[in-house]
Image 1 (tube, rainbow, N blue to C red):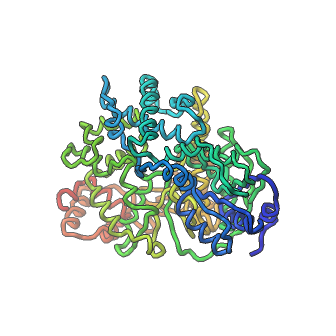
Image 2: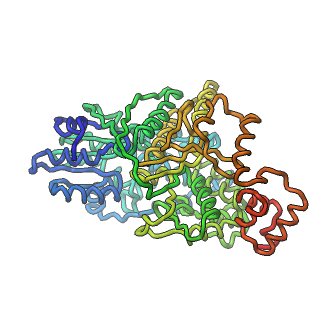
Image 3: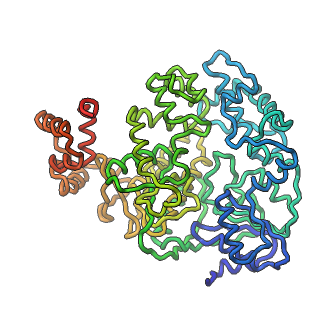
Amino acid sequence: MELTKEQQDIIHSTGNIKINAVAGSGKTTTVIEYAKARPQTSKILYLAFNRSVKLEAIKKFSDKGLYNVNVETAHSLAYKHIVFRNNYKVRPQGYKSHEIAEILGISGGGEKHTEYILANHINKFISYFCNSDKRKVQDLNYLETVADPKAKAFVSSFCQTIVKQTRLLLSKMDKGEIEITHDFYLKKFQLSNPRLNYDYILFDEGQDASAAMLDVFFRQKATKVIVGDTHQQIYGWRYAVNSLEKADFRTFNLSASFRFNQDIANLAMDILKWKKIIGREQPVKITGNGTPGKIKTRAVIARTNLGLLLRAIEYVSKQKKDKQIYFEGNINSYTYADEGASLYDVLSLYNNNHRLIRDKLIRKMKHLEELEEYIKKTEDVQLGMMVDIVKEYGNDIPEIINTIKERHIDNDDKEHASMIFTTVHRSKGMEYDAIRIVNDFISEEKLEKLSDDAKKGELNDAKLNEEINLLYVAITRTRNRIYIPDALMPDGFTPSKQIKVMRETAKDEIEVPATQRQSRREKINLNDSDQAYFVDKIRKRHKHAYKPWTQQLDDELAELYREGVQEKRLANHFGRTNGAIRARIKKLGLEKMYG
C-alpha cells in the first residue's frame, strides 16, 4: 500500500512521539509500519485498549512477520506481574453494593438504605483511586466526582466514613482476605514501579488511558509512542484521562480518513466546532479520502441503552418477522446494570411483586419511588435508564425483549443481520456502511442553553466536551451513509447524498430535503406552513394521516382488531401510519380487551 506523507514522517521519526489520529486514518497500519521499520532485534511492546483489539493486533503483527512485538492490554500486563506473583484470586465482575455492605459490616443510619448508598460510593471511590496516579486514598477528593445535588449532600455528610471504609476494603484485598478486582491489580502494578524491559513501547487509544497506566508508561526508559484521537475520549466516567494532552512529546498528526468521504468529514468537523460554545475549541482538519461503496452493513447507534432499546422495539414491531438483528456485545448486557440488577427485577418492583426479584438490593426497596431516591443519591445511570424503560413500557417488556431475542442472531452470523444495534461506547473501533443516529445525543441548541444557564452557576465543560466527542465517534463509524436527526445537525450545514437528515413526525420518520432545511434559529418552533408541508408529505402515502378519530372509526377499529386483522392491513384500511394505528390501539386499551 502507498503511505501518506504524514504516515512516512511518523515511521521515520526518532525519540518519544505522540500521534493525534482522526477516525479511520489507519493508525494501526501506521503503528505496524513503524514497528516494521525498527531493527528486528528490537524488543517492542504494543499496548492495546481491550482484549478484542489485542487479538486483532496479534494477528496483524504476525501476518507482517513481526514476532519481536509483544501485544498486551494494560490489565493483561498487570495480571502477569501482580496476580501470579501474589497468588491472588480475582473477582471478574467486581463487587455489588450489598456485598460490600456485608463484607464491611456497614449498618444503616437514619436514611433509607444508607448502608447500600454508602457501599455504592465506596465502590466508586475504589475505582477512582485505582485508576488514578495517586499513591494514597487520602490524596484524592471523591466529592469532586459527584454532580447530583442529593448525591453530593449524602457524600458530604458521610465523607469520613466513605474514606475509612474505602481504605479498609482495599486493605482486605491487599491481604488476600477477599478476592481482588481488575482495577485493584492494575493499581498495585502501578504502585510497584515496574520496569518493563523493552526498547519501544507503543501505546494505542491513548485518549482513554487511565492515569495509573499512563504513570507506568511515562516512567519507562524505552522509546515511547502514544497514539489516539483527542476527540474520541469517551471514558471519563471510568476516570480515564486524555494522555495525548499530558504527553510532552513531539506531535504528529494523521488527518486523512480512509473510511469516509469529504462530506462526512465536513460534518464531523462541524460537530467538533461546537466545542467553541464551552470554551474548548481545538481546530482539527479531517480529509475524507474514503470512497462510498455498496451498503452491506447497517447499524443504529445510540447514546444510551434506553435510546437503543426504544429503536430496537420500533424496528422489530415494524419489520417483517424474517428480518434478523444483532446487538454489539452480549444482548443480555443491555438488560442488566453493572451491579447485576436486571430489567425484570425493576419491572417486578414496579408491579410490587417482590417474590420475583432476584437482586438483593432491588428486593430491599419497598416500591419504585424508593429505588428512584437511591438512584439520585448514588448517580446510578444504568439503573435510572431501566426505571425509564419500565415506566415507558411496563408489562409489555417481557414480550418485547423476547421478540428482540427471537430475532437476534449469533456473533458468527453477524454479517447476515439486516440491522445492527449498538451504543456509541460499544461501537468504538467498529465501522459500518450505513448508520442511523438515535436522537439521544447532545445538540448544538442544548449546548448553547447550558452555556447560557451556566452564567448563573458552574459549567461542567469536561462532561460536555465528552458529550460532543460521543456524537463525533458515532458519526465517524460510517463508511458510506448517515441518517441523522435534524435536531443533531450543525446549524447551517447542508446535507448531501451521503448525509440524510431525518425528522420525526407522529412516530414516523421522514427525510428532510436540503432545500427544506432551515437555520436552527428559524426552526426552534415549526410554524403553520412547516407543519402543512410535512402533513401533506405524509398524506401522499397515508391519505387520512392526522385526521381526528371519530366514535364510528374507533368502533370499526375495535371490531377489526378483535377479528385479528394485522396492524399493516389496519393502517392501509384507515389510511393511517402504522404508528398512528398502534397509538390508537393502545389508547383504546384494545390489547388488554382482546389480546
